Amino acid sequence: MAVGKVDEASDEAVGGAMRVAAGAQEEWDRLGGARRAEILERVADLYEASQARLMALLVREAGKTLDNGLADLREAVDFLRYYAGLARQHFTEPVRLPGPTGERNEILLHGRGTFACIAPWNFPLAIFTGQVAAALAAGNCAIAKPAEQTPLVACEAVRLMLKAGVPPGVLHFLPGDGARIGRTLLSHPALSGVAFTGSNPTAAIINRQLAAREGAIPALIAETGGMNAMIVDSSALPEQAVRDALASAFDSAGQRCSAARILFVQSDIAPRLLPMLKGAMAELKIGDPFAYATDVGPVIDDEAKTTLQDHKSRMAREGKTIMDLPLPPETRNGTFVAPACYELPSIAVLKREVFGPILHVVRYESTHLKEVCEAINATGYGLTLGLHTRIESTANEIRQRVRVGNIYVNRNQIGAVVGAQPFGGEGLSGTGPKAGGPHYLSRFSTERVCSTDTTASGGNAALMTL
Image 1 (cartoon, rainbow, N blue to C red):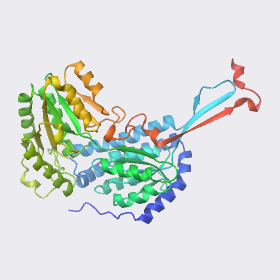
Image 2: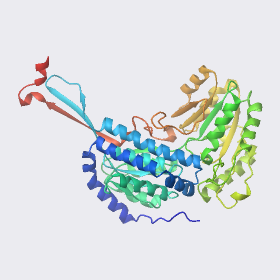
Image 3: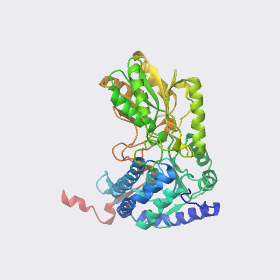
């Protein structure tokens, strides 16, 4: 059954949106952080009032389970309120800087211009909203380009933003083919920056196209996934480690940038832990994401399903199958991929990120922890790392050795909380700054300093108070 239909933006519409945004940005910037914050907070209120409709779209269009849909909505609301707070705090009044008597120095943040916000399908409300809200909070116009798989969720989000008071000239919605729309967007002289979440190859293409432009160099904020590991040593609580590995690998059908892809298990604990993991996987319920009992819904589309099935076939040949769950009959007409787990001789067998419900296990000896950290770093990615240990010195050693943006100790490694766990990686996993963190809006802004000789108007009145 069709959920809806979409009319793709033409090249002419893209160019027109950029021209209108360029003309609207100065007035939006002059509105100030406090006024923009009020609008974003109204958007958050409307999101919450539209919970049922937004969740239904998230389930129907993106295949999210009810739990995942609610989490996506809550994170979107958190982004709106958090960035509104930063706008009110940092974009409202100039900050006084030190200087000699008779001189006043001030610094104030302004929007850079127009940002292209290019969002992924795996968090079609939260990440889409976070990118757009950050751009708007900092005083920029936003060109919102949703993922081709999830334009309906994004369209509803934009409708609510406009209803809350974001001026139509400031926010533009451009669904359609990413490569085609991207060519026009990235080459347009009015473009001041790009916020992108997606694959590493696409981020590299965007980076090259921006670098080839004449004129001012746009900002690029990119988050590009990772080959994330979880390390479990022999001091860990096996029940807790299995619970967190299960959530990290298979929640959202493994379609999270932060999801665990590789489970390093110390050899001493593997004979006990791996049967527990297999038994826990056997309890996962695969099926209709609208059913509350469902743990794992479908993957996003047929292309993803084919890619994942091909990878599973390769892993069955090159590794040892720990578990490949059978699919229930009711999933035969959907894009379902059964959760699977394979034991491999080394992490080197994996050549790229595998974006789906597949976990890979590698055993290691207690004396080879340094080599495990080196193998993780050698992938070039650096997004999340899970660690289960009750030895504080082990945790400290791994924190010092592994170059990742987010480390989670004795818990799962997904579901970063806005404001508490700013999210983003390094290396092949992204440029930073971290989404949902105190420094994120700085990349969307430009700094302007004004130095005034206060003696030029007849003396320095401040001296009267000394």
